[in-house]
Amino acid sequence: MGEPGLRRIADVGAAVIGTGFIGTVHVEQLRRIGVNVRGVLGSTPERGQARADALGVARAYPSLEALLDDPGVQVVHVTSPNHLHVPQTKAILAAGRHVVCEKPLAMTAAESAELVALAASTGLVNAVNFNIRFYPLHQHVREVVAGGVLGDVRFVSGHYLQDWLLLSTDWNWRLEPDQGGRLRAVGDIGSHWLDLITFLTGQPIVSVMADLATFVETRQQPRGSVETFSTARTADTVERQMTTEDVASIMLRFANGARGLVAVSQISAGRKNSLRWEIDGSAGAAAWDSETPDHLWLGHRERANELLLRNPALMSAAGRTAAALPGGHVEGFADTFAALFRAIYADVVTGRPADRPPYATFADGHDEMLVGDAVAESARLGRWVDVPRGRA
Image 1 (tube, rainbow, N blue to C red):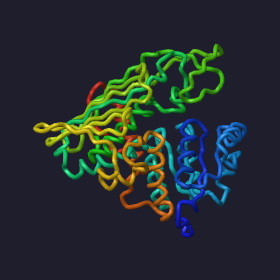
Image 2: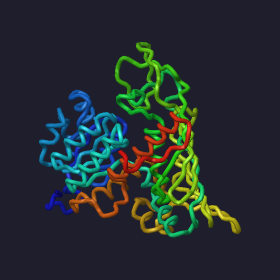
Image 3: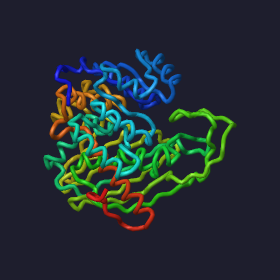
Image 4: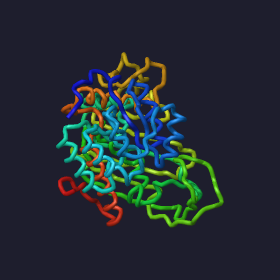
């Protein structure tokens, strides 16, 4: 199902659905790795054209049908609101195009299971944009843990905190369950942390105990559209009752018996995008903070602790592959997209997914949906809930 004529990334044409914050990052990082971004599809033809002009993209497609009629497009990136992921992805796969979809993959686990099966039947490259995996030190740590350097993983802890929804006047489509899904803080940012920890440890989450809370119970929704992370305010609003969570506290059990604890919040003042984790093993520990992404803390019992500064010469093979700059030159959030896309497009050039791709596939996206279902059910029942694998 691939393109046998493709021999290098420069031969690949891509299109991006969605022209907001994340869509723009996709466009910019695709260009950085040499992909030909042929066009974008906006929420309206007018917005699409305005963003295409601003980004210097040649085409603003008036519709998904027009995008898929472009024979030069081999890959489509879906960065639209969550409720559009499934219908758009189905159409893209049916048209024989490879797909990179933002998380969450779907609105329900039943839908994501359907996409997994559909993608498998086509043989096309399918990926979910869990870009946080591709900080170079994360690629390095995965191999460190797999090699037994930390010993048996026993306890994992951390947080993902933001403040962009702190005020009752803050608004975004993610606040609306029919567009964003029934989990908001967990689905939007908590899913990144949960996927990352599964990736780093190699251990699936098997059960959860979750407490969810909504502190901003009513919000002022502007009558017009609002950009993600926008600080603009308007007096022309409608009061809306909130049903999705602002914060979550989640205890975790992993397949090997390890335990975990994570806090997730979108109302933590001063925290713009703070993701932290610590992995405690029987022989050592490791910790990382997104606000100092080139630093990896390594903890020891009987010798001095260490601080590894990201340096391709000192990291594992996977860490070196993800790194684009020499040591001492900080690689951050946008760089993870370039590293992720390099891995995905290596498979696109081949024409099919690798046997064990380093990026998150639709199967990984579906598994994250199952973990989310368990979180929601646990919060509703007030008890431990097993992740319902095999029962989507």
